[in-house]
Length: 203
View 1 (cartoon, rainbow, N blue to C red):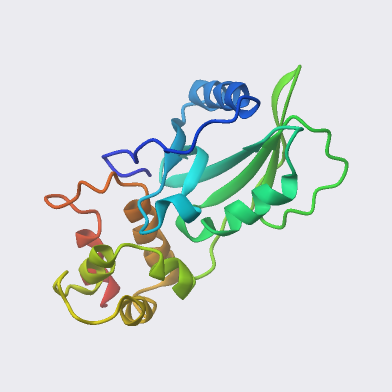
View 2: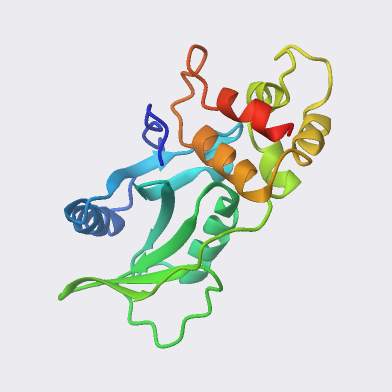
């Protein structure tokens, strides 16, 4: 489930070979009832470093990231990019127009875009591991503070806050909270998605 206020567009320029592929894939999933946000950025502290997503799709409570790579780019780069955001989504895919004979993407699925249209070559596996402290540290300090129910102006260092958040709640509850934080627009002072998780995280 995406937050009620969608994440903003990415400031990263679209590659001319990826742009038509993004349009084709977006249409494919829209026709199948998914909410689709192409060329977006996650609500993280260092947006330009690790948070650009080619396509973010959602259906029900599942959020899926898709990294698009044309035949002029290296698929290995897609896995590196996705590895930075897997703690914030339920599934991850690489989409390409290349003919891939063997796929060793681990939990990451593979989508082929070709003359025949869009085909899911290998389904992704649900990401269920507990979020790493590095993923928590990438959140904005105000988000970490709200998750702990402390003042946003606390003098406690951000890494210490991340370590404290790491101990909250069950794995799936923490993942759900991160998913909503990172897909919100950041305009959350009056209706922050974190607040509904604060008490459950302390149980």
